[in-house]
Length: 339
Ligand SMILES: NC(=O)c1ccc[n+]([C@@H]2O[C@H](COP(=O)([O-])OP(=O)(O)OC[C@H]3O[C@@H](n4cnc5c(N)ncnc54)[C@H](O)[C@@H]3O)[C@@H](O)[C@H]2O)c1
Image (cartoon, rainbow, N blue to C red; front, side):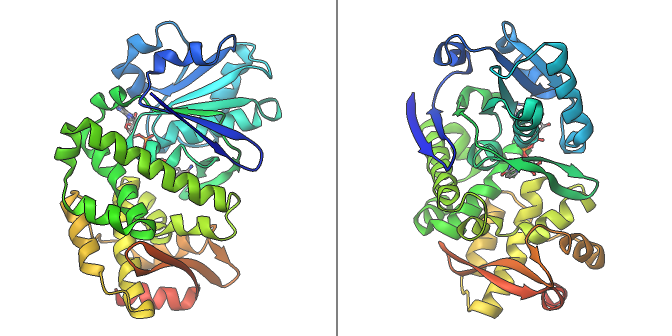
């Protein structure tokens, strides 16, 4: 087990890497813990929850809406959770997003922590304090920014993770490498999902390295006025097609990254487009999709990255080096058409 502390503006979050979920009561001695998980994680690890108070919600993105958060809040009321209770979200990004949001609004905010159980949640969704829900096709439109007290990484939980969810999560790993870490990008070029599944040490260190990339970016810009926007690489188009095509988040942003890389080559002279495409394919991710461009543009224009008639769009100068570029929405539409 390895402890790492990261300070944010209002709180220091403790990260326990390579730990066991069962050690939580000892780590948070005397505190009342209430767990939130989804049906699939609960069914895969029922014994782990045996001695814990647990709220179980339906699994999947279609349930990431205000109605499910209301159900969590109602259960907290029924269980007489008070301001000292700690809500622990155990699951993928859908659960951690909703648990963090529910904890942030229940009694105007109680403490919370996460045990992420997907690659995507471990390297991205559970880190950084953004929590919330979708409203119809609009992803994460309603929510809060509030940091968790802790994140506990229990890699044994990944044993039950379906293969497609491993692949899904590696899209964010490749994104981190593309925007921030050229050496990690080269390292990824020498491996595959199958190899990483077998090599627990390599996997643990890759996840920790990615978690720390996300932590550093968030620390530099917690409320997303600059640096943190880089994490949106591939996400403008990705979010716009994710719901329309019912794609997994990672698949959608893989396609979004390919579009953004192509636009980067036109606007910034980015010359490594084919390495990105090859790596995404090597990690079994899609690099293209058929979608309705007008619909996607309509959704993209409601994106939180929009400011008036311009969009803060993330482009690559080179692998490991990204910039935020303001693009008029009309130009963006033309670029997308051209790709
Ligand atoms: N808050 C943020 O900063 C942020 C960043 C990126 C993504 N997100 C959000 O994260 C969500 C996607 O997260 P996700 O990809 O983890 O999806 P998810 O939470 O829906 O999990 C995917 C599926 O895997 C199942 N699952 C999870 N862990 C499992 C395990 N260990 N064993 C068996 N099954 C398991 C879940 O039940 C679910 O069916 C999206 O809603 C996205 O918007 C948030």
